[in-house]
Length: 310
Image (cartoon, rainbow, N blue to C red; front, side, top):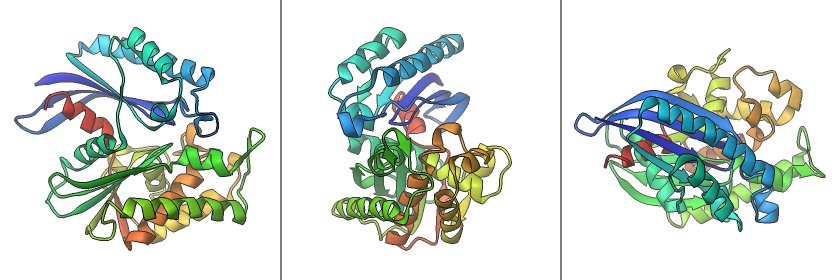
């Protein structure tokens, strides 16, 4: 049994998992799992740089995580950074800040590495070994992975809820809310082009099971299930139908910021970007013909934790 800390720093949020990992039994026992929306990718699609205020938000979260890691007596730490830090010209500032606070250098991994970690985290505990398509919808990118007990094909593409929102819905610092039909169509066009790109590498229509990961997917599930408070145990392994996803998407795209903010299971950091996240999930289901998505609360974070002991 090894006590590990896994940190996943993406475009929209930074997350920590402290767990006891037992490779002999295949069990990962959570001790602390938390998430902070820092919007590290703020403006990266437009400027190519990490904004100073975004870096400070991220470093503040790292300081909090460092205290929790010390309190739990963690033996091994792995910090993985994904889309936003891959794209940024000034990523050395980010790397240096994290190293100073946590004593570990963040690994700016490739999209393919991100996909493999997501697949491991999402599927290691699922029963059966049928072919699965794992879709991890992030803030700046989305990963598509097909495999059975291991990865057979993977592709990361540059569509995510933050990237698409900033690209199509933000004007002079404000978000068009609710978005016009034209703006929605522009987002859909980007998604379809990205799916075409992903399908060159990954047989999207082949697997029997679609598994959805990350905040956009779990939020859709929470809303579809009518939860009054976010409950990971109710969301994990939930099967959400295409019709439910379509209904939630329509709701997110036709309500105002304040109306969405009043939904109890919708995190404040996702209020402005959930519409784009919904559109990605809906387009994936339409492209693959999936009648439902199996929602997993286990994702790249769990994959990172397992990688500490493998």
